[in-house]
Length: 174
Image (cartoon, rainbow, N blue to C red):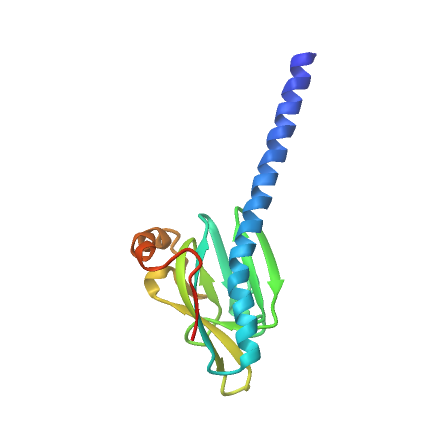
C-alpha cells in the first residue's frame, strides 16, 4: 500500500513539475517577445519613418507570429494587430496596439527558434493609410513570411556569427 501511495505521489509530482517547467518557459518566451512588442508600440506612437534594431532569442521548438493568429496567417492584414506564441503544442495569442507586417508588407512575420537580429520600421500602407511596424531581418536569421515554412535549425547556424557581434541586451534606437 505504501509503495502504491509513493508511486502515485511520484507521478503527481512529475506532472506538476512538467507543467511548472512549461509555464516557466512560456513566461520566458513572453518576456523575450515583449522586447519587440513594447518597441513596436512605441514606434507606432512616433509615426511613419521610425526605426529600431533589437535582438531576440527564441527558444528551441518555439514559433512566434507577428501580425497573425495561430492557423490564420492568411488573414493578414485583418489580424495585423495580434501576435502569437506556439510551443510544445500549446498556443497563446495576444493583442497589440501596433499593427505588424513582414518586411515586404505582404503578410505577417514568423520567427522560428534561434537568435534574431531584427529591424523594426514604421511605414504607412498606401491603399489604406494604415501604419504598420515592419519586422525584418536577414534571411539567415530565421525570419519567414507567412507562406514559407519556418526552418527550426536556422537559429543554430546564426548563433556563432552573432555571438561575437551583439551583446546580451542589444537594442539601438535610430
